[in-house]
Length: 255
Image 1 (spheres, rainbow, N blue to C red):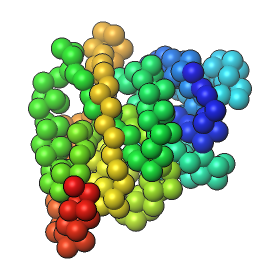
Image 2 (cartoon, rainbow, N blue to C red):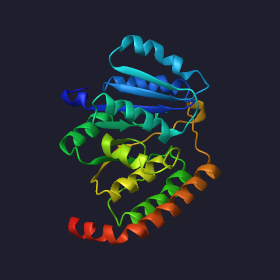
Image 3 (cartoon, rainbow, N blue to C red):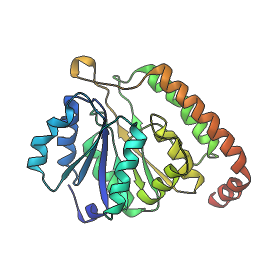
Image 4 (cartoon, rainbow, N blue to C red):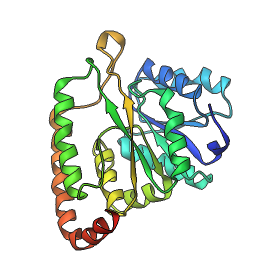
């Protein structure tokens, strides 16, 4: 469970209308790591009230930050890391609130980050039969663009949300752009951190997709979010071309 570097590393979970899965996710996470911060991103389903008993059970291990309006996943994470940095935390593990990411993997992520504090630790999803084929196939396009935009920096999955970031660098890249505030958060910050030369370590991580019968929820909209990703990669490709003279020498040195 939590060890000596819990004073520098915390788990941050943004949540928007996740329903009962939020409490189920947080309960499991608390058994593997503390502290845990949950950012309620303007939810209207009262799912944050389900955390009240957990706050009573873990008064020092669980904090809930409530945002009045829905601002998007990336923006919610930015609010969380600002508070975390003010309190002296240096690294944050982000994960989804919908029970997709395995809490039992948290310790291996944190240990990898402790060994390589300068690196970003990315989950590389291991899909099972529950994963929608269109989602699995579609993310390959985003992954291909991300590796083009970073000259093959080694980002195995640009969309998976279970990651450890150095807070200072994550905040730096987020405050350098008006984007990366919604579904475009993960791929955009991955590319921008690579542009800064931040090493990436990929950890194979199981992922589960719950059916509606099991209570599964998803805020993903195929039209809206794929349009957002397309626009994002157009911008990043332009940024990549402008940075190419600077990126090439760095990539040659890293080989």
